[in-house]
Image (cartoon, rainbow, N blue to C red; front, side, top):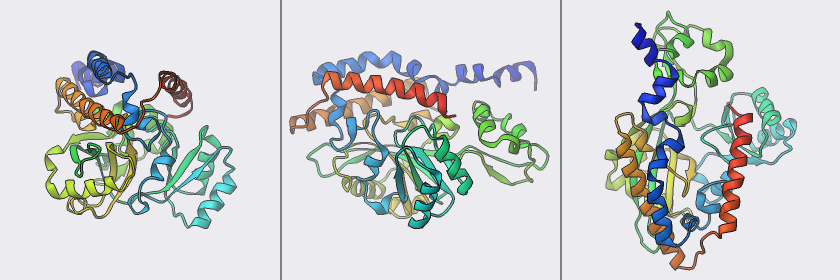
Length: 354
């Protein structure tokens, strides 16, 4: 590797030359005037709160995952149990055992923040450690064995019978394939996307990174499809068709008060997903959802801005329709408190979670 290649593999240059790794503020700052114009149109800075009336804050910030799962028909999401702090490990372990939960499990904070605090728990020891370390109320879910993951953005105007899919992102989880010669760390260092995750991988896997996988052996390093955790996002919106849209629309209409957001699903095969079979909703995101297909490496920042604005306009129309139907917008005092609470929450969670 020559000096230019070495420089291009430095985290600074990886982020600089690939907009998908830019900070949230850097990506969104140039289009904030558009958002403010939408606020003027709605005559509210917090119009989004009316988009999904049954979800706290419309699902924009600080919403409870437990409350969202409670809205979803049980057959469409993994078995989940909520634990409030203080969560004594023995109690958590015995409760889940009595309920028949099987390892591996997934632990996640009840309030999410870009995948922080999500852990795959392979045994009782890992679960006990998660209970002791968690600074927040949390959920424990059964791990969904389906290998594939996608994010499906869904919108439906209140009062209209049929909703539609406005974007599909497929996710390649962070993992490597062994060559029989290199350590996992060495293989990670060959991929720019993975280099940015090195600190987190070291915290998660420690000395395991020094092992040498056999040739052709696949090693999953991060078991969830979060862009901030190294997953590769691919825009597969072109795969939408009437059959998929029919089933996603039917499922979404079973969720009371859900009009706008992204369903992150695990699924077995695309054909089964199209038929509404062998799928599990692992996350449902509301008004704060991003159309994450924008993060396909082939898309430009200009494409991203266009798609974000397109979805903002749909959010405005849905919120205004609900408001016309009697759903109030969040008051200024409430909205200001929500943002302040979120700022403090992000500071706290950044210190405590990798």
